[in-house]
Length: 208
Image (cartoon, rainbow, N blue to C red; front, side, top):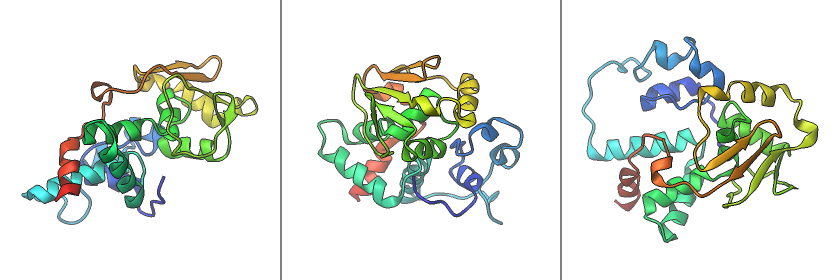
């Protein structure tokens, strides 16, 4: 996850949607997007007309920020998707969804993707019984993701499990919170990826 020096709440307002970058706070009335649902800056409430290029850029920026990636990382995933057998846009979203940090978040063991990346980087997560500390690790069908035995009493993990009811575990994953494990039942289809993004616009952006 890239380093963000600006307020992450401004990113949600800029993209006109909740990116859930602050975990539990995003579900409360303290959420900046709920209080000010318009772009930041003195012209934030002005009615603006966007060009086709601007709309493509916003879709790319929204997706990149949702998954917490830098521009270089996002470009690399696009290039990988472009070389894959999948339709480029769908392949891109599949790659992003199956990153280990995103899977840890989706299983409910972290309150945000940034927190999930920290758990992976600090070696609290195992994949198929082996410790993995690379957040960009791509999981495969049948992989078992679990919280390390010594880390299961961490407050942030227990808090995330308690609040997971606020968001459902994707159908392509299976979570067993009692044993701190999760299984990748299958790779996600486009219908199972709930991010409201028009991936074709991202493809058009990079193909211009």
